Image 1 (cartoon, rainbow, N blue to C red):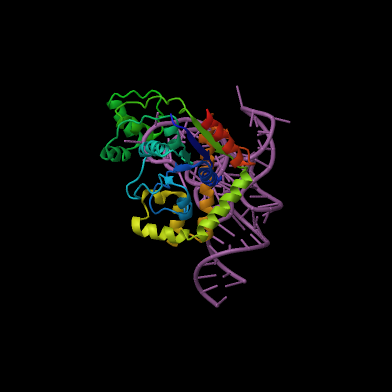
Image 2 (image 1 turned 120 degrees about the horizontal axis):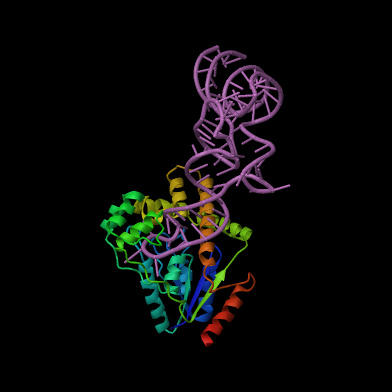
Length: 290
RNA sequence: GCAGGGAUAGUGAAGCGGUCAAACACGGGUGACUGUAAAUCAUCUGGCUCAGCCUUCGGGGGUUCGAAUCCCUCUCCCUGCA
């Protein structure tokens, strides 16, 4: 198993900057594990690396999805595994950074997803109520033991898979180092506030306007909170300060979910706030020498 | 100045004499999570020595066994007539 470095953390924690720096120093390439940066055109609000950064370090899994077509964890896993292989074959170090827990875990724990399901069936099931979906599952004689019967999506998944369950998660990928970045609450608030301001200064509102006109206001990535709030703003529904406030609020909410997600992963090496680069380099060096 | 309407928990908003610490939504806390994951779902969300008690429904004063709900009055906001 080739070595893999993974960097996780809350949104705006500085993981991208750390990854970039490490890639430069250690001859690495970056795999973004971000469910929104995959979409073409959604650049400013998803905090994609700049052109200058991309010229310095190779980035993968950014701009790989069309905003009108959607994306999925399965696609992510497949592309990520391929990217790791090709990076390694070039003699470089793969560094996966991102905040989308499910995507990261799919690689870390080698999730084996069930076969694809038809969009028609999903559409049909989505239109039903929870009790109707449950009824359908019962009619099909599916074993619902252990399924969260109050969560419609879970029941729908069960039906789509015709009762099949995903295989149990595998052990953590070998030869993998997971670094975690954690910030104090007040620091995170400040970082988020600064980042939102910077995005606005960089023309975020114009980007949203352009994307809304091109892909419609209801396309998948437009549902990302920062975009949703600014879509309301450019359409004159809310003021700029309200849009910014919502953006910040959404970032904080996301950060909380990310914390919850990563908390259960006991394999993460949480870095101290000081000398994050030095600590990382040391840990990675150890990884590569074993 | 006269005639109406309104002030409810972090926000929006129900309630309109008892079953109201007060629906619901959002916001917030905690957690679940293998093809939408910034999603979806669960749970908690006035205070406390927590099967009970205490303090809340703009301020003050009444009526009543009992009021967020009725009356008087004060303050502030909106609407119609001047």
